[in-house]
Image (cartoon, rainbow, N blue to C red; front, side, top):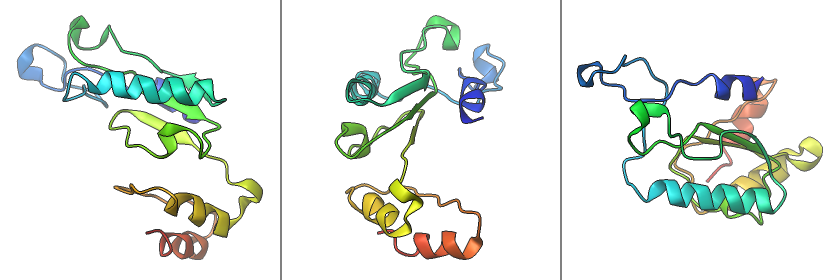
Amino acid sequence: MATRRVKALRQGVPLACCGFEGEVDCGSMVMAGQIDIIQALIDDAVGKGAVLHCGGKRNVSAGGGEGQFYEPTLISGVTGDMRISKEEVFGPVMCVVKVEGDDDDKCVEMINDCAFGLGSSVYAGEKSRAVGIGERIR
């Protein structure tokens, strides 16, 4: 289901005043070099066993073929030895990390093992479980 939704994201220039439709979900990278950084992170992860479900490269068709667009990307099988689990991506990339044994303590340990935590979301079948995990994230 996640792959289908990521593939359906519309990418382009969000400004109707620039001659575009203006109805997009993802824009472009602000800095030109960011695409190279994202690509290096994706290549490292895939090279170490992550599965690329969609995206994973520069989007040359978005924005009329001009601009700094990186395709909305979904990868799974991300592990702690991959750069993408320790470095900020700053791009349209969703990483799926499996927590061994669905263990809440292991989950919190994995999350807190990263120096970056600009945004976190916790989803669980029970609100109390999600709140309990969320309260332990540094």
